[in-house]
Amino acid sequence: MPMPTAPAPRPASAPVAALDIGGTKIAGALVDADGRILARTRRPTPAGEDGESVFGAVGAVLDALATSPAWAVAEAVGIGSAGPVDAARGTVSPVNVPGWRGFPLVERVREHAGGRPVTLVGDGVAMTAAEHWLGAARGHADALGLVVSTGVGGGLVLGGRLHPGPTGNAGHIGHLSVDLDGAPCACGGRGCVERLASGPHIARHALDGGWRPGPDGDASAAAVAEAARAGHPAAVAAFERAARALAAGIAATAHLVEVDIAVIGGGVAGAGEVLFAPLRCALADYATLSFARGLTVVPAATGADAGLLGAAAAARAPR
Ligand SMILES: [Zn+2]
Image 1: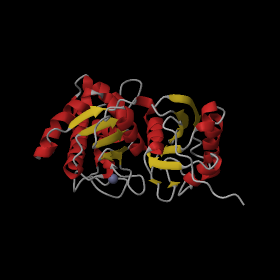
Image 2: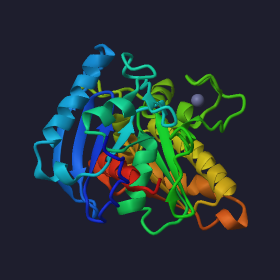
Image 3: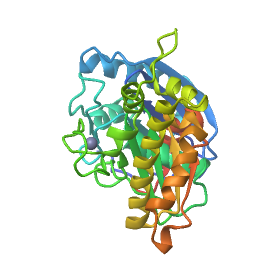
């Protein structure tokens, strides 16, 4: 019987495989040590199908990556997945993929990837890892990342290292309550950041205030942002409210763990100054303690590849 051998130390230049798993698509890439994408592929997520069919799409992505010469030297796999994830158990239960509830994704990917080590983090943590590695939080030892889109997620870098927490969910700022008696949130809490600042809630608030979509019927947060840029008061108010909720959550995080930068990605961040101008203003109201006054808030810089680069960064993080 062959003796088990210690794994060879990972060459600094070895690529890793990265998976970015969401409710609409599953993207995969081979990413080198400098963050260059050597190969990439994607499949639609068959989100309405059973768990095995959804995993079939993950397998197809891995098989496509395995046709690249870089696969042979790839030493690990990183996964950033829509949540909730449980990195301690290696399972995922994405809200938008009902066929996966407690699905053992880490074990299944490890089997499919020839036994390579697999690291799982939530998508907010992955985006934060990408921004710390290659984006706007580069060089910051203590940073908060936020993903503001259909929901509000996030992640933390503390002491120069990604801090995913035991289950891969640390930094989930969306469910910090910033309004004790506020509206009930889908999570069961009240007055959560997400309940005030997610794209659908921005749009809802604008509609309640009297804003109406144009002839194309687009009632998304992006359409509200366009109306806010044109000065529509209800659209402006919806973004100001979201900005205050985000500012309160970011300030609370800064007071708690001394982050000095918050990086905001996700579709709603694409609103630009309509969101960031009131956010910077509101930050002055909430980040009041001396050590938090230097806190800056900036847009994310890693763009559409944030999920893949973050999954790669998580795979490279010291274990
Ligand atoms: Zn909540």
